[in-house]
Length: 233
Image (cartoon, rainbow, N blue to C red; front, side):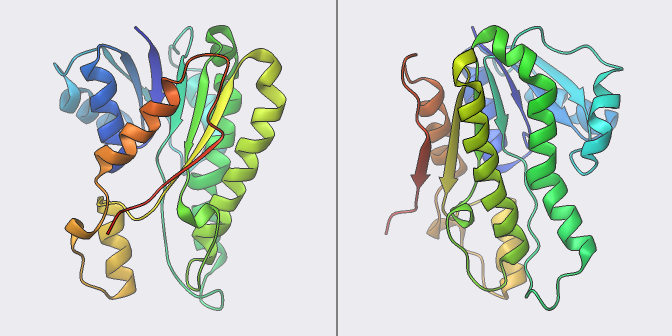
């Protein structure tokens, strides 16, 4: 039985990953932005397999994560830290304000870095695995995607640096780059693009979750570094 901490468990890919891990009897710690959301998550996943714990910390305010964790019990060891949460706000560079840049970078880049820093002792003890659910935008970008893609390119750099630094401690690091996936975030993206949203055109969240578990389940002595997954057809 393994122990995992997951961000973004409330919907989409994060929810699918959580359900799969619980179904096989693993214990999960779910990060919630506040106590009310923590209760909702605990109730949502109750009775689905393994044990569910919650931890409160707002990814939109990464500088406060250390203070928040100092007032809560943390897992003793972590077999994996799964960074799934993210935000997106499309817009041309000429339109994007510092507020949008700050909010995007806080959740998509600075918070994963700080969360990883705070939990490295637990990951080292378990010789654990850090998985960053990135995006195709972490490898390439198009117009209107500047802020989001910049945060995801930065997330790739964070993963690559962490991998080099923590290899000696036995901590594995994987970046997963999903293409368009049928999630609430994708519905928001289509709305911002002014396009009709048809979830049948895109991958399911479960497909990406299976990809994440494939990386986690690789036998020790090897690691998947970068893994891209795309819709077919």
